[in-house]
Length: 564
Ligand code: OOB
Image (cartoon, rainbow, N blue to C red; front, top):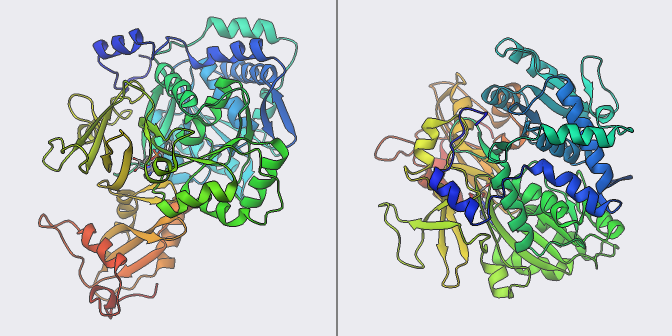
């Protein structure tokens, strides 16, 4: 392995996955020209007015790959990619696959706090960002992060910028991905330096439950299997026109089956930088979109807006919904509202993906989160005693399989908790498995807040808030919310005589460089936090308070409470 800190599958298990044909021993970049040779002028990618054929996509990815190589990036290096949904995201990802440089899939809302800690964790050699995005100057931030890291790393990370305003000390990504006549020769040069298939192809971020987000190294072999098997499970074909509205670097729109599943099958991918109903409906009509994916909060906004949208949505066949809990009512309303079939998706950046079948009966599609994509996926449902529950019982889901790596990258302490000694990943999700083999997600035991599919580690927020001088004790819990499912609610006990408001907490966390979606939206000051027998804040009790707030609730009626 080129990257120390990856936890490999045991040799015997790896051999089994190879023999079964799950792992094909081919790096993901090898697909590029296979696609281009077979499909040439078919449209691979649409981004507004930009349309790239499969051949143009390969030529651009190669041009960028070689430009990166000329600037010193090589097989085994890691870079941060934080791009909004546009053609540059796809070209950059494929260029990385070609070269063996692993992109770490950051999300556009991430700020200094996330970028710096992740760049440090993976020794990032470059940051790829837009110039500006949603009124934020990503280019300046990327340079600040690069400067901070320059003090610790052997070299200053490069800053690559996709946009109109590229500073002299940045590299112009669009220019580097420009095509010229050298296409065939370059193709050969890159073929010769192709990475090994059992190396890390990319890193996905985990929502995580401890301090910082954790990174998951996914190999070419395992991700390829994830992509191919997801595409097959969702009946993705060359007729598929897939609309990408969720942030492209998330495993769901990226490879479940999403962008890469659609390209693999020979379809067309449409990139849209916003999930707003008007933009989505216009894109569906314009590009005759057949398939898209959404988290429940986004699907809800589409269902409400579809009725009088004045757009022709008749091309839409399937919408994949997952990432957080979908109520039965919303599940039942999506198909009729959008004139398509619903497929539920239960997946995770750590690996395991489940879908309901494209033609599943309503009863299954509306009430379950589907079944695993691979016959080699192993599922175990455990009770609190660590023993398997009786069939049909509720317990924590553990999983192993050919696209579920055996540990986080460079995180041995976390791995000791999140993985069993024999390689099972503890999902932290409480599930039951129906007689028909469908997974139903019932709750979770992991300490995170799922805000419309964005995972927020309670511990990350708590660590930062605990450092505020006013705060004696803090607990971040999920407050139920009809729009996004859950929002961060902060319970605090203050030091004698101190006051604190929600706005002050928000200002402090923003100043620390935390992504905006993680900023608490509810705030309760308590005279005492309830505790578990071992003395930790009792989150179950706090959640119960939020679920049943009443004027007589003593904890919520504390006179010392600051203004929210
Ligand atoms: C997807 O991936 P992540 O890594 O952002 O989050 C994984 C976690 C799961 O462990 C579970 O807690 C929750 O998100 N989750 C769901 C769910 N799908 C994911 N909870 C309830 N119902 C569902 N359908 O979220 C992800 C990755 C690939 C495909 C789809 C989702």
